[in-house]
Length: 489
Image (cartoon, rainbow, N blue to C red; front, side, top):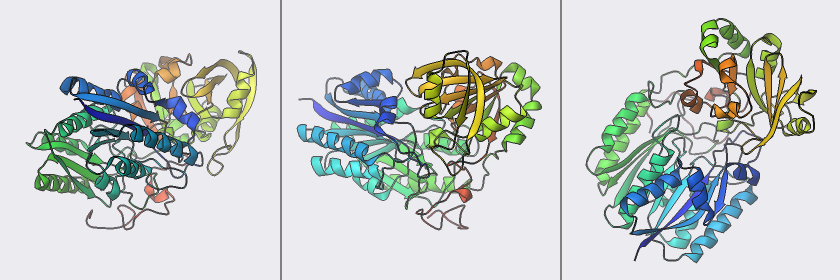
C-alpha cells in the first residue's frame, strides 16, 4: 500500500505595524484552493513550494506515495490576518485531517512570520492542531521563508524545518523539493531526521542580507559546504522579518541531519557564530526623495541606457506596508515633472473613481492618508486617464499621466516585483527615467535587464529599515543592535 502524505499551505508575512488587516480577498488575489483545487494552483504557480514537493514525489516515490491535497492559501504581505479568515482555514484543515485518519506524513508550507488578529505565532498554532489530530509520531516536514521568525515551540512540534536559501528568493521550488525529499525518505524509513536550533539576539535586515553579496555570501557558501557533509540533510539561516513585533524575534539557525544529533548541534552553533561575526556591517544608506532627484539628474547615461529604480524603503508592500506612500509622488511631480516616472499608489476609492471616468479624460484625485493616517498625507493629483483595467493581483488599476509623471492607482497593494507589472499597464520601461518599486530584494534580480542604477529612497512609513526607528513593544531585550552585547546567546 502506498504511503499517504497530506499537503497544507498557508503563506502570509505580517507587518505588525501596518494598520491594514489581511482579508479573505487578499488570499483570493494571491492563491486560494481547497482539496483538489490545490492541483490547479500547483500548475499555475509551478515555481512554488507545492510544485517542488510534487516534483520530489515524482522523482523519488511516484508509485510509493499518495498525496492528499488539503489547502493552498497565499496572500501578499500585510497587516495581521483577520481572525475569522484564519479560523476558517484552521477549521477546514481540522475537518480534512479528521477525514484522513491514515496519514503517514504532512508536508506543511508556511511563511514563518504570519500574524493573526488577536493571536501570537499562528504557525505554531497550526502545528499544535496537526499534532492534536494526527499524533506526535507522524513526521511533519515544514518549509519556511528565509525571513521566518522561528520559535522554540515551532521547533518542538515540527519533525524537521527547511528554509529558502536565496535572497532575493529564487528557490521556492527547490525548497519544496528538498523538504519533500527528506519527508519522503522519512516516511519510507530511509532517514531519521534530527534537528538543532540556535536563536540569536540579532536583528538586522533592509538590504543587508542578499545571499550573493557581502557580507552574507561567504555564509551561504559555508552552508552549501555543510550540506555536502555525510548525514547532513538541510542547513538554514533564518534572517527574520524585522517588522514582526514578537517576544521571540531574532535570527536563528537550523541544521537537520540523519540521526546525527551531535553534528547538527555543532554545525548550528558554527553557523550562528558566522552570522554574529558580520553583524557590524552597515546597511545600504537610503536618501531622501529630494536627494534622489539630484542623483537622477546626475545620471544621464543611466537614463539613456535604461531606467533608474527607486526602492521605496518606507512603504515596502512586500514587507507588509499599505502601499499608499504619497511622498515620492509629491517630490517627483513637483521637482522633476519633465522626467518619465512610474509611481504605484494604493487607493481603492480613487481607483474606482478612475474606472467611472472615460479614457483620455482629465481627472483629479486625492490619494493617500486613507489607510495609514500616521505617516501619509493626502495629495491632490490631476492627470489624463490613459489606462484602466481590473487586474488579478491589484484589482481595479488605472494610470493617470501629468507631463512625465505616471500615477498608477491600484485597488490593492502593488509590490511591483516584476517588469510585467508595468508592461501590462502599457508602460515602456525603456522610456522611463524613474521606476518606483515597493519591494526590497526581488526587483534587484528581476529588473536586471532595465535597471542601470538603484536608489533606496526613505520618507515616512511602516517599513523603516532602521530598527532604532521601529516602534517595538514586545521584542526580547537585550538584542543587537538596539543593545550593546558581546554574544548572540
